[in-house]
Image (cartoon, rainbow, N blue to C red; front, side, top):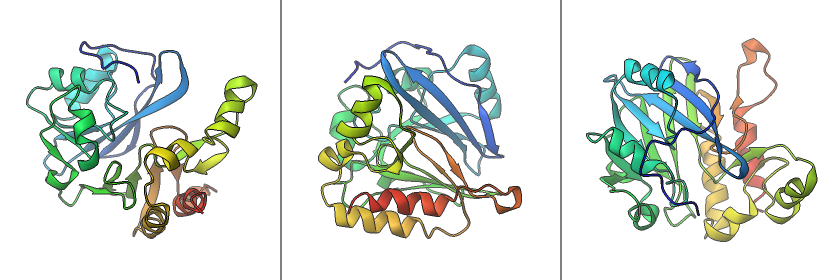
Length: 246
């Protein structure tokens, strides 16, 4: 696991995507890693910002974030996605740091934790749940927007295409992390303590009312917009991933 960054370290990242009036997404890179990562920014009803899987951005992008609202919550989505949590917590010292209950010990090795998902002050806009069968090590952020509901997962669901070369071979056949929506072999080994319970929870989440979008920390976002004739379906994506737990 990479050491946590204590200083503001900006790696290459794509422009901010404005998905809805209270939901932004940014795709970034990792040093010496073929995987990309995703930060989701969500604005609460009071105008404050929740940073899920925080990634340091360049100066202009961070100004946009700060102009959008005050960052009051930094969410570390599991014990492995903690690389930039210390730097984000230092930049926003008044923000509270949250993580899943089962990840708290791991996250506290690098940054203070002010509360778990159980302590997050949910409102009609943003809430968190832990995933059954994961020993409370992973969860989901639920964001309600004018355009529908969004489920923000972390490592439990990958949505990456197969790639060529040695790295592609490892991801496809060793870690089983590519080939569309799926629960990777690493998650099945180290996170999914009860696969049946996790599969059942994912299938229930696929029934989320007004589900419009699924965001994952590694891989493509899936939207569900019949008016725009988008063929991807958010609910089907979750069910496809859940089926890989069989």
